[in-house]
Length: 636
Image (cartoon, rainbow, N blue to C red):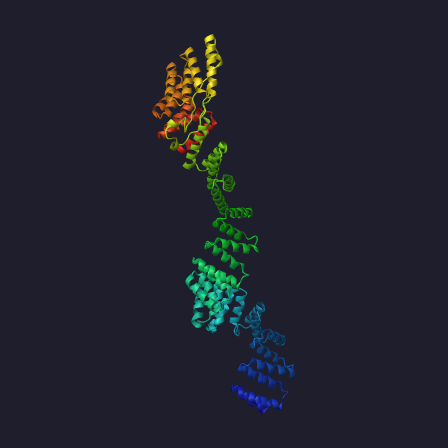
C-alpha cells in the first residue's frame, strides 16, 4: 500500500519514471493486483507509450475481467495506437454498459471517422453535440465527416468553430478550403489556401487541389506553377499531368499539353478522359492521324459515344479523308439531326466532289454533288456544279434543269445567270445551225443576260437566235391557172430543197418562181431567208426590203430585216424594224422579245423591261417565257 501511494504521488508530480519503478516494486509484492497494472498502464499512456500501456491494461483484464471501466482504458490505448477497429469494438462494449459516458462516445465517433465509417461517425457526433453542445470537443472531426458526405455548408459551420479554438489546425483549414472550393466560393477558398501556406509552406500534398482552384479561377500561370510543384513531389499522379495539360491547352500551348497528356496516360492508362484530352490535343495540334488513332482506341469501349464519333469525323475531315468523314457524318445524322453536322457533311461532300471534278472524273464527282444537294437543299452550288457536269456530257435537258434550280436558289448570282445564258446560246446555236423549214412559224431561243449578249447583232448567230419568219401557201391560195400551178410546183420544190439544206438549188428554184410572180412578197421573203442561211446578209436585206416595198405592212419582212440588221450590229436600224413590226401588229410577241434584247444590249434596262413584259403579255411560248422571266429578275 505504501509503494502504491508513493507511486501515485510521483505520478501526480509527473515524475513518471519514479512512479513506474515504485509501482513495479508494489507489483512484486502483489502480482495479482489488477489495479496496479491499470496504474502502470496509465503512466505509460501519459508518457505516450500506448503499446506498452495496452499490454498492462490487457493484463489487468485477465486478472479482473469484470472491471468494465478497463475496457475504456483498452479502447483509448488502441485508439491512440491507431487500431481503430479494435478500439471501436471495446468502445461499443463499454458504452453498452455506460451509454452516457461522454468521452467514450466522442472517441467512438472519432474512431468511426478514422475507420471510414463516416455515416456512423456523423450519427454519433450529432447525438453528442445535441446532448452536450458546451462540452463538445470534436468540431474539427465532425466538420471533416460532414465534408466527406458533401454536406459542405454544415461542415463549414463546425470547421470554423474548431479554427476559432485552434487556428493552427491544418487539417481543418485544408478541409474548410475544400468545402469553399466545392461550393465554388473560390475567393474564400483562396484565402484559406493562402493561410495554409503561410503556416506550412512545404505542405505540398494540397498543391494539387490548390492548383485546381487556381485553374478554375482562370489564374493559369499560377495554376501551372502549382501543378509543377506538386508533380515534383508526387510524380506518379496521372491526374496532375492531365489537369496541367488542360490548362496548357487552354493557354494554346498545345505541344506542352500533348506531352502532359501522354504522361497522364502513361501513369493511368485506365482513364478514358485522359485519352480524350490527348486526342483533342492531337486534333488541335493538327496531328490528325494520331488524333484519329486515339479516338479509335476510345471507341473500342465507348462504341456509341456520339461526341467522340463527331470529333473523329471532324479530324478525318481536316485530315482530308473525306469519304471516311462523310460516312461518319451520315451515321451521326441517323442518330439525331444536327445543323452543324449537316453543314460539315455538305462541306466534305462538296470538297470530295470538287476533287473528282477537277480531275475530270465526272462520273465519280456527280454522286457527291447529288448527296450535297440532298442534305442541304438551300445550297445552290452543288446544283450549279451538276449543271456543269451535265453540260459537259451534252445532256442539255438536265443541264438546263440544274442551272435553273441553282439560279432559283441564288437569283443574284450573276455568274450562274451569265453561264446559263452562254449555255443556252451554245445549245440553241447548235439547234439553229440548220435553217428551219419554210413553214409559217416563229421560233426563238432563250436570251442571255446583257453582259454576255453584248450587242443585238448576236441575236441569231450567237447569243439570241430568233429564227426567220418563213411562209407557206394556205389552201385558199391554191393555184387556179396553169401559171399558178407551175408557180406552186416551183415553190414546193424550192421549199423541199431548203429543208434539205440544198440552198443553191432552193435559191435557183425560188427565183425561177419569182419570174412567174415578180411582186409576190412571200417569195421575196423566202429568197431573203435563203441568202441569210448562206450568211449573205447583204442580199438577204435587199430581198426583205423588196418584200416591204411590195407590202409596206408586211410585218414578217420587217421582222426578218430587223434580224439581219442585228446581225450586222446595226442596232438602231434593228430597233426601227422591230418597232415597225409592233406598230403593224401589236400582238407580234417576238418583236417585243427582240426589242427587249436590243435595248438590254444598249444598257437601256427600263425599255428592255417594258418590251419583255409585252412579250409575256402576248406570247404562248412557255420555254422563251421562262427565259424572259429570268432576265426580268436580273434586270429588276
